[in-house]
Length: 174
Image (tube, rainbow, N blue to C red; front, side, top):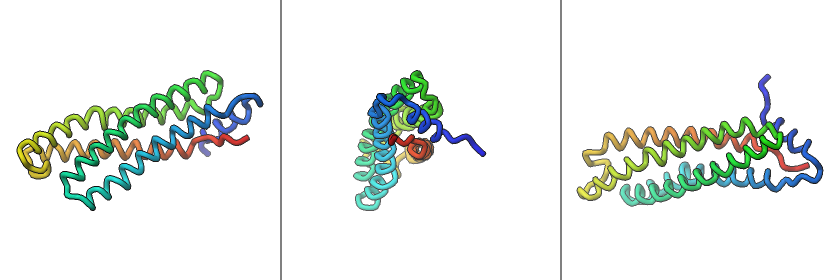
């Protein structure tokens, strides 16, 4: 039977000194849920509705803005969560050690998917707009499609890692 990280973290919380505040652990959980919740909502609810409700260029422009905001949320939450997790591990709460790897994976997905790939995609979109055509009907269509597919794959991996992170969040009840 596999080792349960969730039990490690919950045991760490139960073993904490009675006067130890649970506020940092609750902030950790809140930040994790904010990041993962916003990511799932924007990527799998809002973006599809935009593309089914608006014309393609407008939907793409709005989706790009939302993914830009999501990229910033991911970067800020990811860094803060890593700081919290490192502090917890230094305090001897070793259950957070494995959660850090999920956070690192999610942050890598944000950095590669949004900060490395999106600038190229945005440049192609802008060049197509300046030429007066939709990206799908431009000379950039195949390269944009390839980058979009790679970006979507990183988003999916980040989503799965995020769901796993939330699943493993410790209970902050004593």
